[in-house]
Length: 185
Image 1: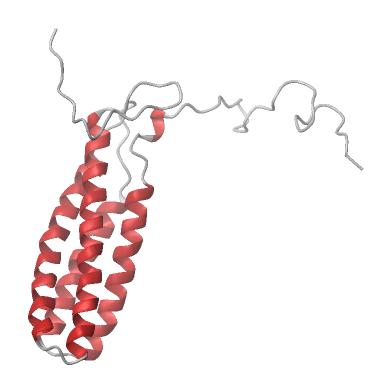
Image 2: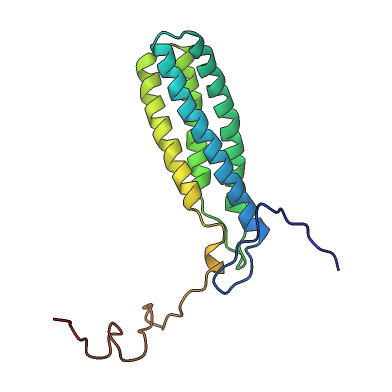
């Protein structure tokens, strides 16, 4: 019997009564989290460096440029991780969400436009795009961390009757909807 090696830092995710999430679902989502976190750190570093330049530290402009170039590279990694998230199939064969891929494409385009306006010295457009880029990247970061590491089909759901409604709880007690409710004075 062959044992599959596991990374000690990332134990398998378990649902309430289900098996561990398959690595095909878990690993791409972890990669997306890492890339989104690195992108957000670079975006925020770019704002700090731009502020340093505006405060008279002219060497910060070169560091701002390097941070923008590094951001472009990390956004490509984020795009690849987002594509893996979409392509990763869960236990029921469903695809991952598409929004990370759309967000990564838009962020990469926005970063290209941001870099172009910076080199053209179009300060008004550069600052406006910078604010939008920071906001969008932070939303992508929060979204990446809110993605569950397990797929939606791995979480058990209550059965529905033919009407599409969830079944009513059985029993007679407070809050069950079938018996009298006592109100404390």
